[in-house]
Amino acid sequence: MATIIQTIVDGYTDLMENQSDPRVKDWFLMSGPFPTIAICLSFVFIVKVLGPKLMENRKPFELKNTLIVYNAIQVIISAWIFKELIHAGWFSTYSFRCEPVDYSNTPHALRVVATCYWYYISKFTEFFDTIFFVMRKKYNQVNKLHVIHHGIMPFSTWFGVKFTPGGHSTFFGLLNTFVHIWMYAYYMLAAFGPQVQKYLWWKKYLTVMQMIQFVLVMLHAFQLLFIDCNYPKAFVWWIGLHAVMFYFLFKDFYNQAYSKKRKSSDSDEGPASAAAAVKNGTTKANGDIHEKNGFTNNEAVRNRGQPTKS
Image (cartoon, rainbow, N blue to C red; front, side, top):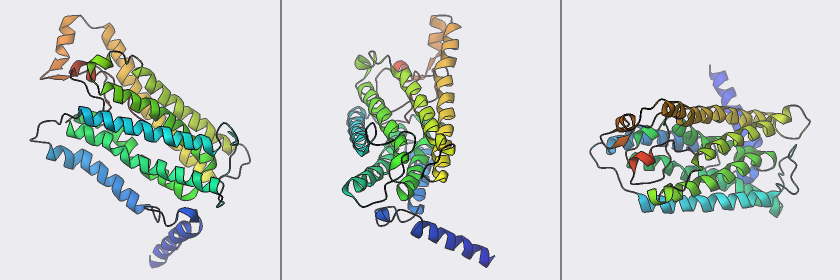
């Protein structure tokens, strides 16, 4: 048993010390995965256990202005990272078929590494999406998809920064930040209330955009299984399987939030069914399982199939 444990320890030490990118070794949270794992598990505990307990005898917080500012900041962060990844070489010098990681210490390579690191850090800031749900006592929105997605992303991106910060890996971040620009812009506008929300007819297509994103990531990652490319095959599977998992999670949300709602609407019988949807001041929208952090004073509008973030 002692030999097995020592072998595991030696293997882990070799992986962290000799197989990882030395440029990020001394950066905050990058020495090993356990601090990130601890933060992610703490997040899950807070939003599923501690937060609801603290809010048990409190009224929901009204966070309209906070949500407007928060979502505006997320738009700016996403736009900056997207711009930096374009500068890295996408649509110019990068190849969509095979782009090895540049492990040099040139200014350009270091700038790409820094962009990957800040993308990783940004995943922690997105915890506030869920925390705001808890503060507003929107517990039905703190569901499986939402918690899995936000809880796992910092852990997933940590490995990218630690071992492959640049090249082929950054395609996922490029698409993800592009989607986030539109996503958080939608949530910012929705936070102004029903006077603006009535113009946001395109929320359904944000979820479609998310699913397209994961299909493109799958294709981009798994193509390396069939061509010769100086890029770690382990990360081909790591990125590709994440895309597969999130595609089916978001597809399930789409089916429940939109497809089932459409079928239910077809069978509705006018005012009686609409009245039955509202009880004790909350809306029970057919098939709606996930709402983002937009704010409105109209509960019936707010709880109708809001798209979820990716």
